[in-house]
Length: 277
Image (tube, rainbow, N blue to C red; front, side, top):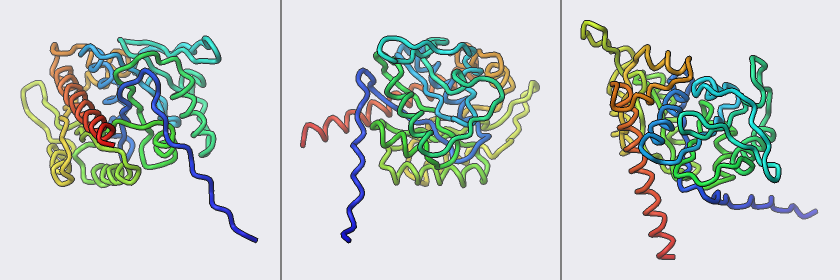
């Protein structure tokens, strides 16, 4: 009996009206990936971009809490989901559909369907940036994402600790394997400044920048460890709302500017290739 070849999966299709899709990933949990994703989204909105955010961390959907909006989304038009809007950012999360402490128990096919739904059945409208907050690790969600839509690139978040960077390098290799360009690395919880001016190196400040240099990738910036960042996330008032008015707001704004520039650079290269072909 002849053995047939497995069908070739369809090529990922761009989402109409969305200019850049950027994945926000990390090799491990606990490095503040969602905190950075939320504050990056708010900072891009403050810069004047139209921004959407998908909370694809299905097992730990914290974006609604961090953005301070938890109402269930409405169905509009032809079975389209209307995203919520908070602080100038449109967003969707499984935490809005299944709120509370009930865990999401899902396997690959179900995860794939949710990611497709969040990408294709949400009424995003016209966006400059659609950020996708990935779950930590190198699992099914990333594969579903790259199979569904073409990504502009990815941003990898890490602390400076050796353990976190060991896993961050796995994330870098994962994006390389699925042909997603890494726009750069961000070091979160870099160092802590006490009220008297004393600086404490908590996780190994500067090590993420060295990793970026090792991989010949841009270093997008660092965010200091600051209780106000945590407090803002708990209250649904991200630190980035302060913009230039606070130290952390400045850091997030600077990272957002670098991400926007890197995304524009990648897009221009893509356009050049299309014109040549």
